[in-house]
Amino acid sequence: MLIALLAALAVEAAVSQVTLYSDRARVVRTADLPVDGTARAELPLLPESVDTSSIRLEARGVALQKLDIAHVEPDEFPLGEARTLLGQLEKIDDQLALLADQQSELAQHLAAIRTIAPQVKDQPLRPLPKLTPRGWAEALGFAQDEEQAVKARLRETAQKADDLMRERQPLAQKAVLIGGAARRSGWRVTATLQGQGTAHLILTYLAAQARWAPGYDLQLLPDQKTVKVSFSGAASQETGEDWEQAAMTLSTAIPATVRALPELYTWKIGEQERFIPTPFRADRRPPPRPPPPLPRSPPPRLQSESSALRQQLLSRAQQSQPAGAKKESESGDEAAAEGPEESLEAAPRAALAAPPTMAPMMKSMPSPSPQHSRGQPMVAASAGAARPLSLGAEVGLAPPPSWRPPPLPPDSPAALAGGFDLEFSSLRRETVKSGKGARRVLLFTETWPVTTERLIYPALSPDVYLVARLKNPSQRTLPGGQAALSVGADPSGTATLMLVAPGQELTLPLGLDPAVRSFRNIAQEKRETGLFTKDDVTRYAVTIEVANPYAVPIPLRIVDQLPLQGDKNLEVEVISAEGAEREEGTGKLTWRLTAPASGKVKLGFVYQLKSPRGFRVHQ
Image 1 (cartoon, one colour):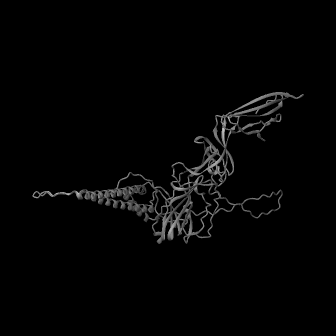
Image 2: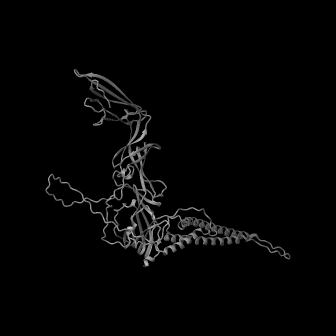
Image 3: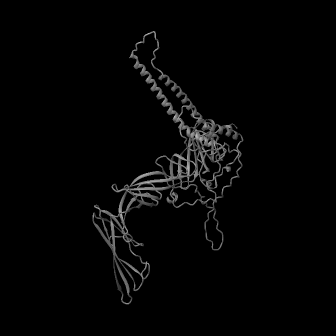
């Protein structure tokens, strides 16, 4: 009963780590809280996009007795956050009032210093006294030093007042949002802690409406014969919460895809004609359905308390500015609103069922095992645990039988990774705002050795393509994605990369080289053969020339093609193809050679086509 009466202390648990998947994110919030005996900690309001079945809380240094999760309606009032906010405003206002008093005293002191001046009494019966200027310098110097010191203290107090007003502005606007009508719904997580010392809380949950897309920047450095590879991910989210300065990890894994393993049963064979033994798979029985949820009814006492606290909050936020402080323009961040406290002791875990779209998420996430930290046991509580955890309880790891994994878009990281579960950590902490578009997260930058050559398809185009051939020298497996290409400082286009495994070779197009031109010529010779049945024999001599205008040799790769026999009445015979690599089954011919500086290369191949007289050849 005493524990139920304890007021929950609002805990500022900042987002410390985010693991971003193709369609959701795993968010980790951390906070430190001093505990002396029994305490109730109210964590920040979680948005509606959170899957409540994935919520986990670890308490290191103290014992976690109970974890309550309640849905907060938009019209409910966040008592814990309002208490904390009201205390912060009162503390700043007290400091501003103290600075105002100090400024008033300093102003009076400065006015008194400025009144210091030599005075001579008017005595008409006596002669005027003689003035000695020897002490004037010391008197004037003392007055000037005191005046400068008081002015410096005035400037210092004014600067402190300005800083406090800037700190007060977002708190006041947050108080107006909480006390007014602009409040949002979500999930409130409240933990009951027991112990002595500092509790390190780790809150973990899954949130929908988050994604990332891989991208590459490939810059060819011709002088160094290397290519600079920068791999990044465009991260975006509409979860309803901002991730401020969080350690980002981008993953191609697919959460919640655990399936039941096949199980062998007793196999008995009886007598039956035409028996064909066929093993079959029988899945385990589905877990029992949870009981229906019970209605929740918040305690009536909280309504009056919230109304009084709301009036205090609005009065504190809208009160006049303390005297002597500089007024700043109103600006600040919007704050999340919460609702009244309520315990889940009267509502079972089924009352906290996840929304239909998020229900299958992380059904297979196991509860963390108990550990020890600072001499106290660490307990990991799952979502909706209204009682202390007990050992030996059954935990279902498989999703419901009717659940099917969501289809993946072809451009998602999971699809582009080709089934590999890859993880990439950001080089620095990143901030990703909710609903503010994609933010590019740099993952790594490496320099790979590269070999450039001119690729020519003379049968298709006279253009010469500059390509780079490189091999992945790292131990990373990289997913596919769009790549922005550049040669030096000049952009040369884009390319689509497929999955790149360690040691795999790939070719990147870097644009056209207009200085190098190719020429292709075909000489045709036709004749007849045969005594009784006449056949047409056509001889084709293909000649290819490439001119190199550069003062240095350049490597070339020239690709052409031989026709293949597609009809039994046709015969194709290769007469010569000197220096070419022939690919069986496709007729592809490849020459790899080097064009001399300011010179030409000439090559060719000869083949003949034999067909019956009058036979029409087509392709």
